[in-house]
Length: 337
Image (cartoon, rainbow, N blue to C red):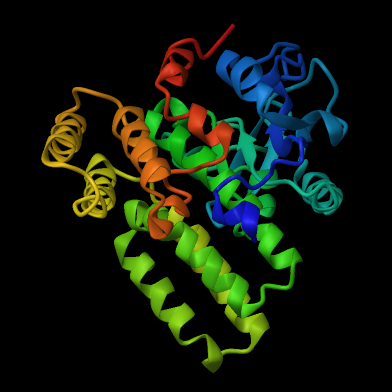
């Protein structure tokens, strides 16, 4: 658990595998032979991740170019049909998705990025033509639905929602947290290791979801009341659910204040004033999150306070850290090549 405690897990040199809709990488697989290349995804995140591209519509046999398809019928069980011909692809796509997802399970994915509005890959608000009148924005792509049902803890996002900087950061944080969690599971999820894992993630959880953070703390404290398997399952589900809520400025500010308070008996008044002023500047939106984090991280390293220096919140994986530098915001403005 030493790598985890320092927040520097995943230092084995291997890039994390992320499933992705092929068109987002620039592959010309769409119905008209085009693509939806996202520059930030392909060029910036591509330096951090190993992409596993998937195009359900091409792989199921629709070909290029092809008739576009759409979802029709009931929201809870829509059909996928040709937009003009009405050819029903539902059974083929359902069977394909089941088999493809089974193969993806062997690839140890830590996240998935989907193409928004797609009848196969859309995560939410996909158009469903339910009869007369305008389509309902209540659907989920057939492949995406099976993916999320099969891997309920897997961090999944669609590129359309990631125009929001907070969602980008939340997705990346969840990807690396999921990888750390999977490593704990693989190691047997022993209770003492779970305690170490929870303690290292306390401030990260507090920033994202204070209510579930408290629930996870009670769960760990009551660990002897559960079997190891049940405890591991319940903790994992709640842990990923907690991180699924993007951390707000208020949440970060609260945690930063907590961290700053630990230095009160170690730093002089001038340095404590500097911390307080920088935290207030962050709260007011005058500086990015990286500014107070860098200052607090430096003090934590110098003062060697165990309960602080072991926090994942201050010592994230280097690639997570890139999300807090502010550089990635520029990439968001250049979504397409």
